Length: 302
Length: 325
Image 1: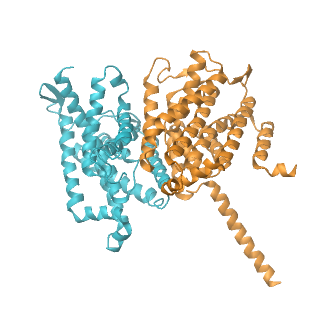
Image 2: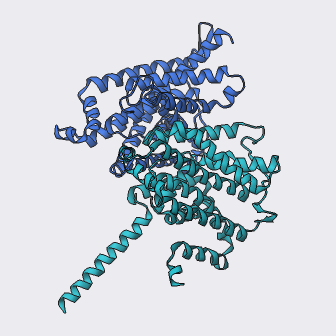
Image 3: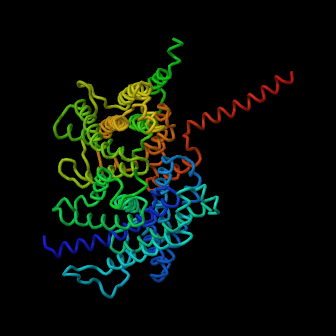
């Protein structure tokens, strides 16, 4: 195996990992504000790509406008999810919460199906690819490996977003208020934090982050209305891998998962790519067995 | 005689024994499939309702049972009964191996880990072409037969499946009221308290996980002989969700309630929604959400609550009248 090929797989892995990191960050954001794990996180990613595609093709808007509208749409879906599903079942146990977010995931991912029977919207049911952000330069050479510019865009954009979120949750009043409303909801309420509002914010933020991930990944990944669930699960795996409940853990876990997965696919002859979607979960079971705290060590897991 | 009729199991058994005489032909598949899924749901009910451990990967254990039966009968020409026993054995062994690392986790992580296991099973079966046929799966599985007697008609299958189910329900009832059953309930209430009482929490959790996987293996083996084929898409996460949903709807602690809920949900899924194939996942998700939001204690509780409400109302009216006179 030549060095160039390994570099190629590592960079492909990093770009995939950037998106996993964004999904993992979505999980972490909601968990830090409400102690809820939202199994519908992957649907935000799918919707981000799907809505952008919809605004581009059916409404004919420009690419940036479509992306912004799509992110706003997904944020609305995220808030709707909290208001319609999470809020009514917040008192019921953990099992109901898991099933509730799974049910929401089923509903959100299948909504495009009835809509696609409307005239001229049949394409919503098919797999789709968005045009890349920069079309003038298709790929660049890094140490002899050819990398498409879209992958570099994905890495750069998610790094910026990760930085912004890190600043927001650690250095702003709202970010701290969000965290305190999960640590001790009653005490947070007593000092004047509107806990319910904070949970809604967290859903809005993680929906937006997921949507950005979807927009970044759709040009390099064949997306369809039902591919959200798998992406969401891999984001969850990334969050556990890095250290559950930690922003730095989600980011690190995302990149590590992306690179390891890409190397498994690239370096294991024949079986690597045949069982492409399996490696992440084998990594998951290994990490749960040997180090459930994750790489950075999480306080939320004993 | 009167004492015997008070026995719920016996009444239900009698009801199931005579029902083929009255039922329209087209409902037999629902009863057969309902019985098969009920076996898996029964195992899930023990795991979830009594021991308080969630699994979203039980479709994989059903699949392991089905694939074991399929491989052994079609490629090694084993008799079905032997393949059936092997299916139970294989799914239990795999549950034991996979349960050891997975059951160290709790709550959301257990849900994720079992989901991940289900996904591994799906990817493996759908991408492996030799022996198990990839996405196409395995066909031509013979009917269930015992010593040459073949269960090939719906009525025969009905009696076979419900007899097995009845046996498992009685076994589960005894298990629930035994020493280990009490241990499971203690674990589900408070693991720490249970372990201070001398209950080996890890051992009991693994035991119930393996037992529920064995039930799933039985269901899978019967499913393979019923459908006479196995396909990876039959054992995906939707089936796992279906089984957990059946347990929630039937009420966590009620074994016959879970069976009833499974039959009703099977009827809904296979008879009503199959005409709207494309929308079925959407409608199914909406039903799931409505049940969780409005009756999270299960439909059994709804019946009990309305009964209680009626009793209160009637009782009040009765007391009112008797006070006046």
